[in-house]
Length: 324
Image (cartoon, rainbow, N blue to C red; front, side):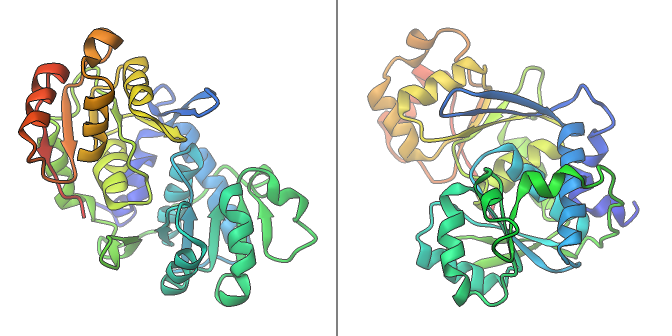
C-alpha cells in the first residue's frame, strides 16, 4: 500500500471517483430541494477546494475548521483537507459564539469554512482569534464582503476558477487527519482512524453493505458518531449516504426514511422515544418503504417498552456502538 493510499481522501472518495455512476450522497434541505452527488462530483469539488485553500496559503498540518451542518460542502471540505495533509476540525454550527471561539482557539485553526448562520458570528470574533487568517462563506453572503474585508471569501468565487485536478499528498497512516471534539475534549485522529472502527461498523449493521442499503442519521457530521459512525465508514465502502439540512420532528424523520427507503440508521435514544410517542405505528402510517434493516444507537437503551416497540413496530433490534 502506498502512502497516498493511506490518505483518508483516497479511502473515502478518490478510489471510487472513477466510476461516475457511483452515488455518494443524496441530500435534501428544509425547503425540499433535493440533490444527488456522485463520488466523481465530490472529488472534483474537493480538488477545486484544495487548490483554492492552497492559494490562500494553507500548508500541510495546518488546521481548517469546518463549521457546517449536513450538506454536500461538508463532505467536500473533509476530502479536500485530507488530501492536502491538512487537519480537518469539524465544529457544530449550533455552538454558542463563546464556545465556538474557545474551540477555534484550542484548535489553532487558520481557516474556517462557514455558512450564513456562523459567518457573522465568527467574523465578529476575529479580533480574539489571531491565528484565524481566512473565513470562507459557502452561502453567497460572503460575496458582498469579498474584496472589501480582508480574509473573508466566497466559496463559489474561490472555486470558480480553481483547477478540478489536484495531486493527493502522500500521508503516513499516523499522520493527523481530524481534530474532533469527543465531549471530553479535542482528540487528534490519524489517517488510519477507520482501520479499527470499520469492522465494528460493518458488524453493527449486519454485514453492511447489503443490496439496497442506504444510510441516514440525524447526528451531525461534526461529531464522532456522525463522522466515524455514519459518513466516513459508508463512503469508505463506496456507499451513498443521505444527508438532511434542517430540523426534523419525529413524523418528518419517519417520512424522510420512507421517502428515501433508508435501510440503515444511527438514532439517539431520545430520538427513538420521540418517534415512539409521536408515531406509534410507523410502518402502518408510512408504508413498506419504511423498512429498516439495521438500527444502531450511541447510548445504551434500557427502556423495555422502547426496546419492545422497536422490535414490533419498526421490525428491528438495536445495537449500541461507540465510535469515538
